[in-house]
Length: 156
Image (cartoon, rainbow, N blue to C red; front, side):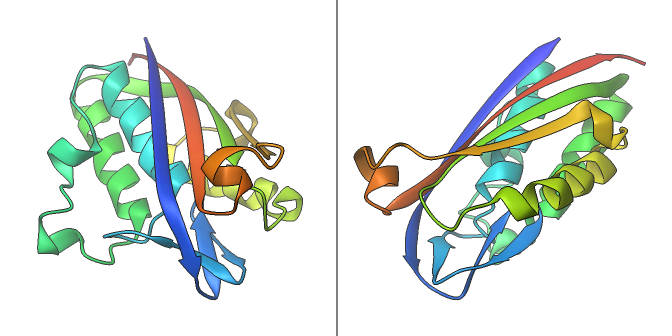
């Protein structure tokens, strides 16, 4: 089974940006109810969608103060547990981050390792890519960051 997830957050002045569970030093941050990690939010949606369990808002609504400033790794851990309880295992994950700056090349390996650990799969089954929008649209203007995630899950 295949799942797809997408997330986007507005960028504001700050001192770091959390992506894929990794804190990236930056002069911007994501405006969000939780930590604004678009990669992990998109991953949660992909995982949930792969087995028809709704979306991130169903399980971790931004109207619930429990999730205020929450570390998105918690969302992935809880979601992974739901999948395992439903009899599924994650097979592979492919991530694309779209952001003009900061450049992410030196952080992709660490993101890959964090995601693999959270989903209990070998790092070789996780791929993290980063690209820009060639200065087009809200991402190109530096107003936002987004991520797309595709995953495959199988019955245990």
